[in-house]
Image (cartoon, rainbow, N blue to C red; front, side, top):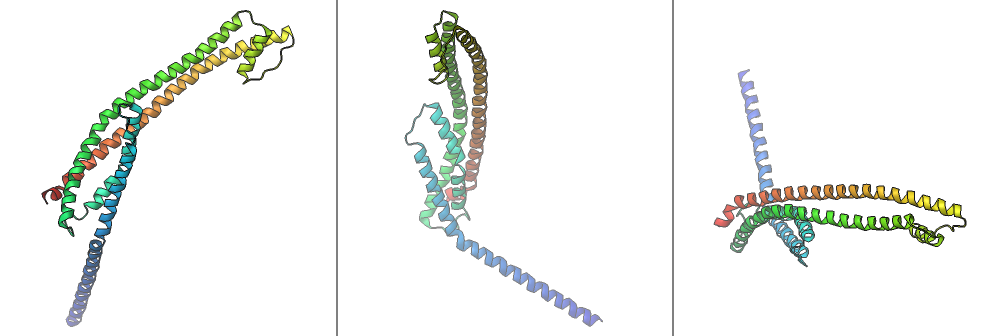
Length: 256
């Protein structure tokens, strides 16, 4: 019985050794396959960085600095598209200095310092984004106020016309203006008084609705601007932290 148990134990040990060898061979093939694919992945990374550069050039042509709307939208576009250069840098720096040439080591050193510069730029854009948010908010509110005053001025003019003596021809013109150029013909004094009363009621309702619409417009513009500002400013902070992390993790490239 002891001999049989010993044979079984030896067979089990041999099977475990064979499985271990198979696992080692599979892992070796995987590693060598990854090494063979490194040049392709790195070239993809360089390509993504070049495409990101094209995007940045397109954003800044033409440049309109000191224009808060342009600065804010450009800031947002930089944040929205930051994933492309981040992936590009990750691909380029993959596997460190393995399978690199002397010229590529110089490029890696430049790119490593570039990630630090980009991290600083994204950090700087955060207070600029907040400032432009405030400036754009003021501009939007002023535009709404100007539009409101213009509409109120028209309403006041119509009210004054109704309060004073109004002829049938003038009433016909007012109705035509409100109906987009066409209005029913007034044939009797009763129709004239009825039209005048209806027009007065319509103007009062329109004035009330105008104030409601203005309040809604103010609220919607403020909310949309706030959402974009929060999203883009938080995105800029995350992007800056990731670029700084890449810079710190690629010290080997700067030493090389």
